[in-house]
Amino acid sequence: MKQNQVLRFVKTNATLIALVVLTVALAVADPTFSTARNLSNVARQVTIVGIIGVGMTMVILIAGIDLSVGSVVGVAAVVVTLLMQYGLSAWIAVPVTLVAVGGLIGLWNGFWIAHYRIPPFIITLGMLTIGRGVALTLSGGSSVPVTDPSFANLGSAYIPPVPTLVILAISAVLFVYKLVRDLKSGGQRNADRLAASIVIAVAGFALAVYVFGRGDGLPVPVAIFVVIAAAAIFVLGQTRFGRRLYALGGNEEAARLSGINIYQTKMVVYVTVSLLAALSGILLASRLNGASPNLGTMFELDAIAAVVIGGTSLAGGSGTIGGTIIGALIIGVLNNGMSLLGVSSFYQLIIKGLIISLAVWFDVLQKKK
Image 1: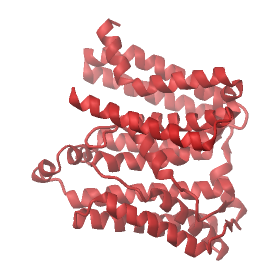
Image 2: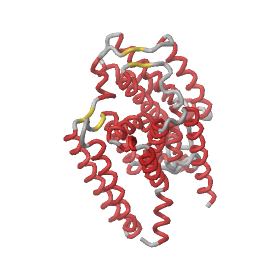
Image 3: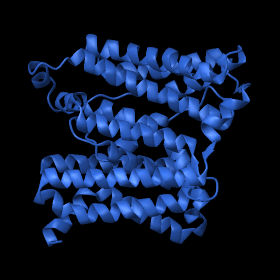
Image 4: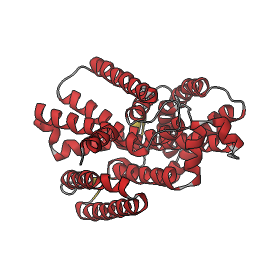
């Protein structure tokens, strides 16, 4: 590639390059970090924030924000465990919780934001407090154990290695197909990036085989996250709804004049992010085999950090799910690496705050060019 093409590639894939550098540095600092088991644990930990981050990306794309997702995680975890204590099976309690917690909270937030145009920061900040209070009230301020043994499979089970390898192979084929299709539709502009994209794809596939293709296999939560992320990538890139989100975030008044239903679009987005936050709470309760009313505290920080680090503009109208996935991986790798190196949790908060500040600063610099 020519020098200008290399510079363009570095600029376009800055977060991915940062992830690779961070991973290599941590692997050198502590060999335990690069073991397949540890990387599998990192992937499992990333799923919770990653799933929330997918919904948060859509919210920030329309120039909104949702500070209530951490509380939604806590409420959903408490509600799903209580429903099982009241006699419902796990497979009934899960969808009921998604609708009763994620659906209703999303409708509440969306209604006030879309209908009365109240700033989303205020409405979701209020729901953050309300949700935490509901979780504490329902649980009595104490942990709630899981009574249905099958519920643990949702957050702790693995897809065996052989089916995992088949899934990875199919995913690789679909990715290559997408690359070829983009090449045909984009001409020389995409042709210049094809070689680099193939290298990235091969490296990612090899790493996935190393981490998941042996031992226990692919964790079920990771598989759920991959499906959700793939669906979101398709929606944002290939559907009218996705184009509406970018248009709405770019200029709401212009979007309104072009015939986009602003109210409906905002309602769908806020319901979606709440549903995904509720799903994360359910997965977390399953993995921990119990629920605490304090689950999800500060998750909104990690989700927003993943989205911003991934390149989504806080002003709206610009960003990708792929970037958010990389941002979530950076947060997960950083958390895991700092824990392995014995970095105090106090310093970890400082470091993550600085990273968010730098990511926003970089976003501002990009807009000035």
